[in-house]
View (tube, rainbow, N blue to C red):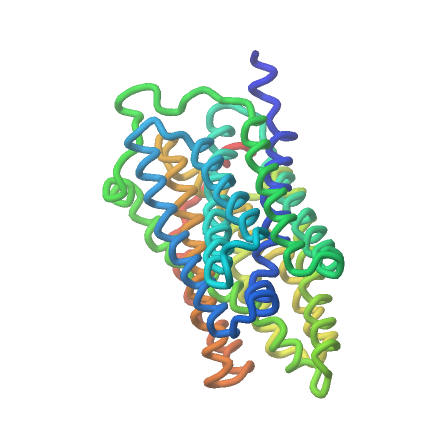
Length: 399
C-alpha cells in the first residue's frame, strides 16, 4: 500500500501531458477556429475568448470555495472540467447548432480547459504534501513537450479534416485527462482534524498577507508573457519588414517553437536544482528573465534577434511556472494547499484575460514597439511586487 502511494509520477506525467496537449489543439487554434471555420471577425473572436477567460477566472475560486465547504474533491473538479471541455468540443462537430451555438460550445470548452491547470497543480501538490513521490518539474516539462507536439500535429489535422480536426483532437485529449485523474493514486486526506480544515479566503490572506502582493505580481508578469505570446505574429512582422503573411507566420512559428523547446530542461531538472538552490531565489531569477525576454524582443534586430530573445524562456516562464507551484505549496499551510494553488492558477488566467484585452488595443493605438515597452513596464512592476512579497524558503516541499 505504501509503495502505491509513493509512486505517482507516471500517472501525473500522463495527466500533465494530456492537459497540455488539449491546450495545443484547442486554445492555440481558438482564434483561427472562430474566424476561419465560423467566419467571425477578429474582434468578435477576441471578445468570445475574453468572455470565456473571464468566466474561468470567476469559476476557479468558486470551485475552490465549494471544495472547502463540501466533500467536493480536487479530483471531482478535474473530472467536471475535463468533461465540460470534452463534451463541448465534441458537440461542435454536430451540425445542429449553427454559428452562434457552435461558438458558444467552443467557448464552453475553453472555459473548462482554463480551469484544469490550477486544479491539476493542486492535485500534484496535494499528493506531495500527503507523502506521494511526484516529480512535478518532470511532469510539467513533458506537458510542454506534449503541447509542442499537439501544436505541430494540429495543422496536419486541419489540412485533412478542416478546423473541426482540432476540436475532435481536443475532445479526445480532454477525455484522456479524465482517465488520467482516475488513474492517480489517492493520498491520505490533508484535513483530518477540525483545526486542519481549510480557512476562508479572508482568513487565508490574513494568515498569508504577503500572498496578496505575490499574486498581484504574478498577474502582472503573466500579462507581459501572454501579450507577447498572443501578439507574436505582429512582432514577427516588425522583425521581418516586408515579409508576406506566410513568411511572418513562419517566423512566428519558429520563435514559439524555440520558446517551447528551451522550457524543457528547466522543467525537467527543477527538482534536482531546487535541492541545491533555494526556491525563492529561483523564483526571483525567473521574474528577472521573464522581463529580460521582453526587453531583448524589443531591442534585438531582425528575426535572428527575435529567436535569440526567446532563449530567455528557459530561465523565465519555464522556471516561473514550476517554482511558483513549489513556492506556494511550501509557504502556504498544508490545510490550504488547494486554495493556494487555485489562487495561483487564477492569477495566471487573469493575466491571460488582461493580455487579451491589452495586446491588440495597444498595437492598434501605439504600434508594436510601444506595446512591448508598456509590457516591459508592467513586467518590471510585477517583478518588484514579487521581490517585496517573497518569503525565504529554507526547505522546499517535495524537493
